[in-house]
Length: 480
Image 1 (cartoon, rainbow, N blue to C red):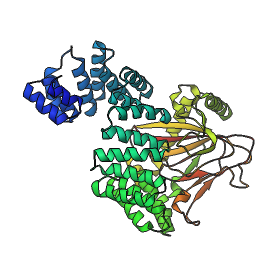
Image 2 (image 1 turned 90 degrees about the vertical axis):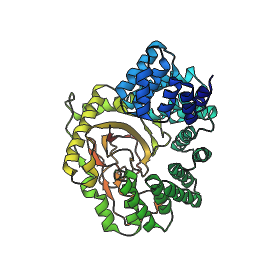
Image 3 (image 1 turned 45 degrees about the vertical axis):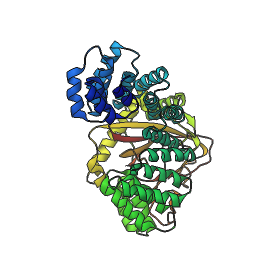
Image 4 (image 1 turned 30 degrees about the vertical axis):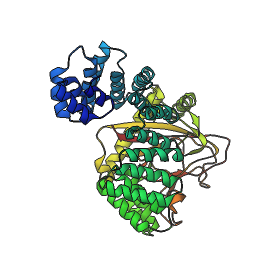
């Protein structure tokens, strides 16, 4: 192995580039340029030297095209490499990432699993496998391949950060902490990592340490909204400090106006400051929370038939699990994305959601949040099946723009004689010490009712006691 190849394998890309140029090794030079993200130079060189016989260069070209956002070209390059060598791990990894970028998570995951099996000691293969398991919502399974990536390259900060993210997502904050610290040690100037460490420390109740890390993150990354948002949540977890929390939210919104979390925490801060009129105007619940009764979608003639089909599909869904990790469901079951099924009831559900959201956005388009509503969207819908005593904890949907819920089966006890089983909007978690007189809005679920709302609005449900199940389908509409 030449000095250039050794430096490339060790991820010393600047050194690899210099050695390759000195030795006239255009192949390693191109690979190093891709890794250094010197895209124009890499593009010119790969165009000059790529040949049909070199699967490695085709894989590098696929990487380059993906970084450039040219997913179709990236897929073609990966396919070309695999046509010459079906076991080319780099090409499998690249095709997995391209397919995931195109929304084909299952096929991407199959490539990633094969690459990880072929190269158990290759960190990149294990990392992509873990990343796609997370995308497939198999969070617990994702941790092991990410640990293998870290074991293969313990000094590589991005693998540590990926593992820390997965552990935090699984609510294993104590395990995430040393991984965040190792990622920071590998890249001390990364302010975002400080903000992420701060969030884990806050979850562990170590608020003073969390505050120090969040402030360090703000100093290191003044244009990243995550550290000020993390600091805002830490400050709101204390009895005072709401004024500075509000300033942090405003800073985050100036950096990222589309941050659902920033909008949500701003509402919390206004409540905590006793500025209830301002909070009510900010949340705009009377206008933005819209209950409606959409028409029965084809091919169903009766709503009861549509609902029976939905219940049967939900009960048959293999992802239906009791209180899944990292969810807000208590005393109940929850599925993953129902819209992955190409069955009449779920195809009809998708059309129902998209039609209702289109009309909703048209009605509220003048609100600042919806002026940035994306032209192309994706929809994710999941069922929640609550048993007696079941409820949803306070939460928001930070990755979406519009969220909603459609009620499929509602126990008789969920009536207008009380709030058992109702949904409430506007009240944040007790962690933030919300005042009792802060503005809220409550709605009674009814079979066939759909409720649409902005994804940044805190909401929860009240428990109920009944022999019947409370079955609803929640959904998120996101850019994509």
